[in-house]
Image (cartoon, rainbow over all chains, first blue to last red; front, side):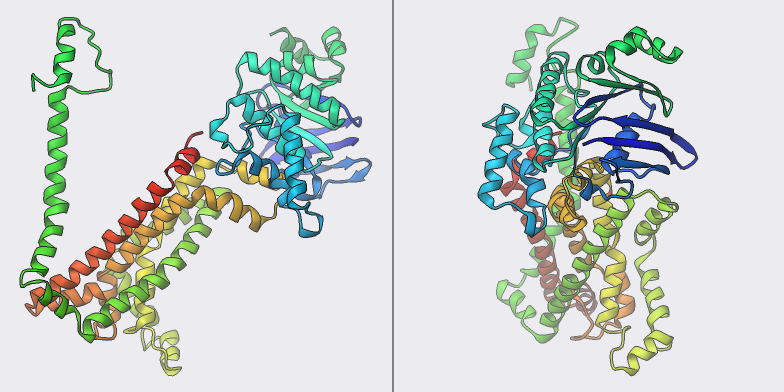
Length: 239
Length: 298
């Protein structure tokens, strides 16, 4: 799905989290929102997911205005920073949640839900953990379950907030490849937030560098590396 | 002391400045002293009075004790107390959940004031609360007078007893839930939203299961207090025997009439009800120990 962000701004009380920003994301792209904390990248992601509403501006999905679409109607697969798995449910129940929450008319039958959950568990390469609780999983497994849960609703896009933030370096590398693979298999427009430039540069097709609620530069990783547009980008990449 | 295994095991290292006792552990003597203090304290403050109540109730034999409860006055008091708890506790549970939800999931002006207001019953004397209810709903007020005319008086009748019990116990559930819900944050609810769940569905499938233990604890505390409330109920009930006298009120009246077997038998029943709720809680915790552990690990 093609995503158009048109002059979106967001104020929390008196502080502006986002100055009007515009961004066009081609269908099927893997995009990184890169920037230090407080740069507005998570706010932008949450606006796309429908968890915040912009103070001004519009969001368009495939050229249709989606600014006032409710979270439930957006069908955005969202992976939260600390994964927010339902701790009292098994992995199976976690992944099935979105399917079971559908209104009766669109809800798949029990056997069909089981089949889809099994398929997703295979996709994340953890076929045998359906009966476990989130507390019994490692950090990397939790991240993959969160990904499977988000994919279960057959989302129109995939939004990930610091998906590798809580993991150690080795697992992080492994899961980067995992995310790339899932993106390539599903073909979903995927946007992830990160403060780690290596992660952004290595994984994304398109990197959006943000600072203080503004977009500093948009471009392919190699272009940004070769030609930093502003002093901030140059300094941020040098670290 | 010196022949305990612990002392023997540590003695060879005693000359070293760094023996192998964990840094947060006190010396054995200190630990024993600490435990002794606590045990003594519990014995005098909690255990002895409890034993005394039962001993006094059974001082003339179990038959006398049971006989003293087998009259209409006593059974009416027990029934009234159970009815009051059965109405007040669920209402306060619903209110407590709503208040805790509102306070923890939303940001708004006047939040601190609302939290303070919820705590009000803890700081206001129950007698004052009872008097306030009489002044607000008494027969010579507009609301109270109208209700009397309809044949449903509020004060000196069941409604005021329920209102008084609710006023006194209403912080319990909210107070238990607020810290738990703050700690859990909104992430799981947001996740459920992005997965397409409706508000009610999220409440029943995500929020409620996450707070159920705190809720249970709050409800049990609320229940214990509702059954035991004396001050506020004493003011609003009018203490009519066989009609508006709850168990605590009846106990006081019997005691003042030197009917000590009757008074202490009733007190023993009230204590038993409290013990029963505690046992219930322990059983539930034991039954769901694995789930509890799973839910508490991050």
